[in-house]
Length: 598
Image (cartoon, rainbow, N blue to C red; front, side, top):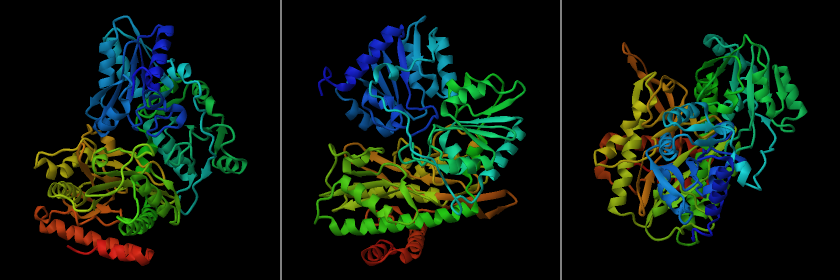
């Protein structure tokens, strides 16, 4: 692409012209919205619109002379391709939480200059770090500069999808009971009021769902919880009269979305407000005039610990999801070599199979189907303009998931196409050993989740191999596929990451050879009490929830121990037992074939 005619080069130039008009040296464009969401409504996808980089995480910095996207290793290959010809440089960072963009900004802005950012989409904790670094460099920060309002002429408006209720039996705990839990937690923290802005917390608290964000059944809102009354700030027309009446019966009042800041400013002088600095924006924080207690949202902890009733619904959702995959993979193996199959075909067919299952409400993220070199990009997404045909020899990686009324699924499998090479089998087996090692782990209750990360990496480290993403993320309950507070990764742990019963986490080590192939094997697991323990305290272990065969044709058996083979055979026996009643015909035959013991 010619940098002189690249639409993204032209958009960056427009942003640079806006900097000149406002007397700014640079602008920071985070991948964020007023709720600090991971997946953004179109209106706030400004980093993507300006740069052309479509990864779900990344930060754009534009100065008067240059522009740079900061992205971690999951996106390096993708970013290099998408930024080509735009004149925007890629700065490779070690993790998605890295702050190199802050240091870069501080070093590129001169003492006495000013950097702009839209404070309404900048997290409070991030703002504190940014301001500190710029202050040290003698650089001022302006927090009311929305560059998108200056340069995006046809910027989409806020989403308008209706809000609906998540009802029993799939929502086992009533809204009033959840609000009572929150008020009890507020009281323990010494707070009279509590601001919640994260949309997954709000959806969970109020047993409501929506469609404002792709793949996540959430809606844009803020909530202000008081000692007796609660106000839900949501756009006009999104909550119908019947639902408003049901909310009112539980002491919840609906107010216009834009009134949240004014309501915070109007809190009584003796109020004490609980806010989570990692989950509220600078813009809202600046509206607060009362005393503040900064701590994690109690709802973030509460919703991470699924109840026994929720766990049962999740097990049923996993079985339905597994049955859909049996149907799809039976078709796939039958059609391979006879029909033209592309990465796009896989997405269409697998999504259609899920849509036929009871309780299905949509995908939990965009399906990743990557053949050979495309599988080496962890967040690859096939497009009509660029995708692979499934033919010849190699490895096909499929990472997919569904939203069901009773749970959220996320699974990755790798399948051999033609004849896999010895090197591919070795990589596959070493990743599998990591999945098995972590899946079989027992640990004391309260163990900080990042401490478990090395267990999955050890089989790869033994051979000098590594992967650049986390090993596991929390998963919501008919909510976001990525949920905190726990993460099995190299993150610096904090006390809120303690592993507790009921938490659902992914186990997904991987290995990626750019330009060749990628391997990732992912299951979701549930923290359950372990039979071991006693004088040394309570222990937990993982119940593997995901029900789908792990392909054994890619295994180098010389690398597996007898106990690892026994676990795999036991898992396949469980998959066969749980899914057989839900499938028939070709799908049943495929299930029997792929769950045979080795």
